[in-house]
Image (cartoon, rainbow, N blue to C red; front, side, top):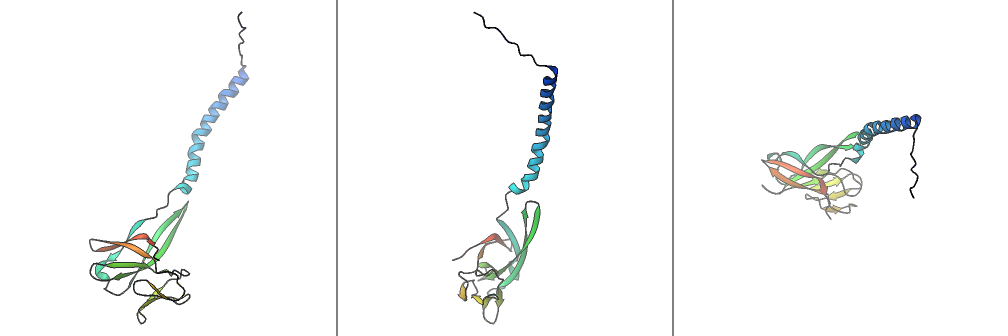
Amino acid sequence: MNKPQHSVRINRRDFLKGVIGGIGSIIAFTYGVPMIIFLISPALRKQESDAWVPLGTLENIPIGIPTPFEFTRSSINGWERTGISYGVFAVRKDETNIRVFSNICTHLGCRVSWHEDLQHYVSPCHDGHFDLYGNNVSGPPPRPLDEYTTKVEDGILYILTPPFRRS
């Protein structure tokens, strides 16, 4: 017994709807996907975190005296570019050993300054004191000043951002 064969007939109107719909889908996909990628790509970009920042020549940093430096790093968040200013103190222990500390107090984030008469970094917010090498001496700061990893190349001091937490 043979099964009857059914032929599917499509009329002209349904055929044109299918062809136009297919072409429209291809066009929408071709233009839509790149536009969506363009719009969301800034939010998916990886933020730069570690970077070596040059501070200056070693000969400009006297031994045993904290030397202040400032630098600015740009941060990009989506389409917004922000310049953030940082401050550090570089302390040379001798001809080859150098340490660099953040100037941000570990208590409330105020900027510390070096007081030559006290031989301390002092935070103006709650009178926190740190010694020459950033160790907390008195006041409410819970830990020492953050420290940067350093390297010297061709007589120029570089620091690696961000600083590391000391405890």
